[in-house]
Length: 193
Image (cartoon, rainbow, N blue to C red; front, side):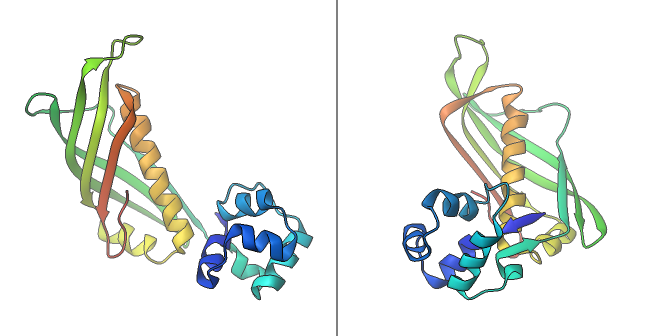
C-alpha cells in the first residue's frame, strides 16, 4: 500500500494547503489530491519541490507499507427484537490482514443497534435505516498490527471497514440521507467515527 504522507507533514508544520500552494507554486488542486491521497501519481519535479520546501526525503513523503486487508461480513443480517423501530445487532466480522509477510485472521466483534424510520422508501418499499451505532473490540493480533503502521494506513483500514459495513447494510435496507452512522472499536489507540 503506497500512501502520500503530506497531510501529516503539513500538520506537523502547521501549514495549510493554500499556503503551501503559494509558497511552492504547485497548484492547489494537485496539493489537495496529494493531501487526501486521491492522486494516481506524482511528477518527480512536484515531489522534489515539496520535499525541498518541507525539508524531508522522498521516503518521508511517500510511504510504502506491506499492509492489506479484507473483511468478511456474515451472509445475512440478523436483528434481535427491540422496541418500536429499534433493533439490536450482534455482528462478527472476519478480518484477514496481511502485514509484514504475516497473515492475521481474527474476528472483530461488534454489538449495537439500528433505528429505522417509521416509513419505507416509496421507490423500493424497503425500510430505511436512520441511525446505526456499533461498539466493539479488535482482537489482540489486529490491534497490534494496526497500531504499528503509520496513521495514514490505519485510517485507510478504518475507512475500509466503515465502507464495507455501509455496503453490507445497504444491500438489504435503504440508508437515510442524513444517516447517523457511528462505529467505535477499541484498540489501544483506535476509534472509528
